[in-house]
Amino acid sequence: MYRARRELIPLVYLISTAFLITFLGISTSRADPAPSVFTFNGSGYGHGVGMSQIGARGQALEGKSAIDILNYYYPGTSVISQSDTQTIRVNIGHLQSSAEFSLLKETGSFQLLKGDLQIGAIGSEIGSYIRDIKVNFLLFGNTIIPQLTSPTAKFAAINGETSWTLRWSPDAVINSKITTQAMQLKYGQINLKLVQTSAGPKLEITNSLKIHDEYLWGIGEVPSSWPAAALEAQAIASRTYALNKINTVKKDCDCNVYATTADQNFVGYSKESEAIYGILWKAAVTRTSSDSSTSLIVSYNNKPAATYFFSSSAGATQNVTEVWGGTIPYLTGVLDPWSLDTKINPRYYIWQRELSQSAMASAFGLPDVISYQVLSRTKTGSVRAISAISSTGKSAALSGEVFRSKTKLPSTWFDLPTPAEIDALADICVIPNRKFIYQRNLC
Image 1 (tube, rainbow, N blue to C red):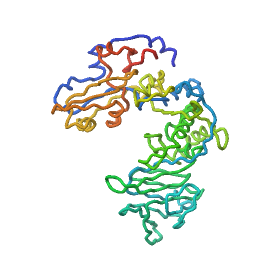
Image 2: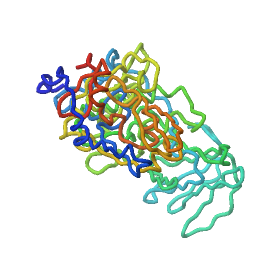
Image 3: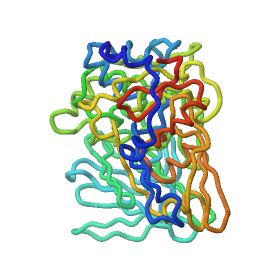
Image 4: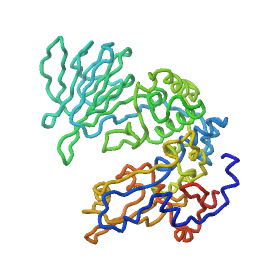
């Protein structure tokens, strides 16, 4: 961490109530019946477990290597080479009603096949299509019907199936449009499967491709303009995360991982094709490969570690036990002072968000909310549990992470404790001029 900040860390400060009201914006209006707006002041972005991406950037700027960064955020692990040629199934469309695919720049061709085929498996091909032809998959009863369209041609109707496979030529890039989400896909294949839900039939849409390069090239977790060591650390962490998930197929998504931050952000070909910087991300992935079939991963007991990561903290990463439960020896929390650097974390060093009355009530499942209370905090000061009370007298409680998920707050590091609460928390210390707290044994 920054040497200049070390002398601040052992200092414990009591913060005056006036400071809390003035600086943090805590309003006495909470006592009012059903306030229209609730204001939250906080720091950091994400769940706080594992590697801080801003922290990785900060360490890279200080000259640390990717392995240095990974060893710091996952203490007790080692970076080794391991096979990564497995195919991963990435959900790019969850519980959808339709999906449209076409050829980017009308280059190459795509093939439509019946069934939920594995990569390389032979299937019944409906046809191969070129140029301006689009295929739109629609639900009709308990089947998926592909509709082919083109400004210059007409096509016969195709009978519905419960699953389809879409493949394309090596020179093609597929334009994918699922609801309002657009994506470009160059590698692997697309599978569409009908699933039954309480709301009726829906589509699960996946992209299957190789972890080694095809999947990693499409990870859009950090800007490609970041320092090389930070990019390499992210590539290794993302590869390890995928390998940690590869042996489990989630029934709810027909996938190993989602293409969203529910797992890790996969944006497809648009990542490597970024103007100017895309080549830098692709090169970072390549540098972390040992050869055509093995690459660097974070290992614990000779197995891929659970390499969770997030954007930035409020000064220290979380112990996984306090956030999700369970015990993982290398996810117990470390100091993360780089997240407090306004130059590299200007947006989330400090943040403020307003939640409407309806948003608060919806989060807690109450008719309205007249007040809320932080019930407990983690050792880093993030909210571990929070409750709210309605004007009807009914109350509800949520974990900090569930509350963050429901309200879309950047993090659970919000509402700094009052002086009385600070006295009651034995294992914390407060750094002056910062709206966060540290675990004392980390300071």
